[in-house]
Image (cartoon, rainbow, N blue to C red):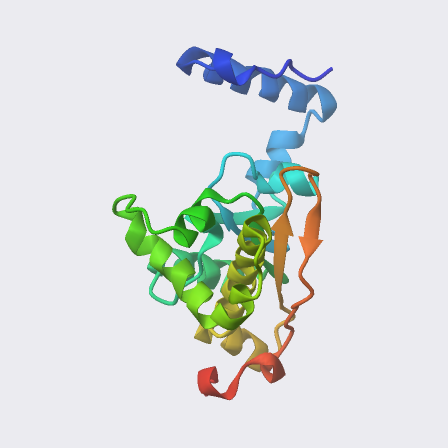
Length: 218
């Protein structure tokens, strides 16, 4: 029997620790060797690059277990070539863990993307959101044809995920892996908070032929 979920308003420092103990008991009851196997090492087939939003936990929404998905999260799942944190995660996941899939997953209703659509100053995060505004500028012709505000918001969420996947694909890390014959695919997804379903944006890339000439490295 699974431990009772704590309601958000009832979460305290102590309840988090008790929740951990309850979870450990559930895992051991279901599989006495669970933590022995988990501590032996990891070989996840997937790197997930997602938003920090607390409502979008990678394992839960894909129904996977601890050890199945290597995860990097930041505000609005932004992928830029100057982010050494992300690049380090990407390098480790591809060259050490040998993941077979890199998924950039955005989500509808993303607060970061919503903030990037407006002109209100938020704070230091404005510098981060500039990357999403660059996505808007790149696709300004398409975005200007979308008159409905909600639809325009949703489309920017999608374009941001697609741009992120493209930026992953264009890294020297991914290109070197493909050049060396490594099996690797890059995908863009969007998750819906309203339905719980993931939308595949159908922009999967699997090799050097998908890299634009301007970004190819030798």
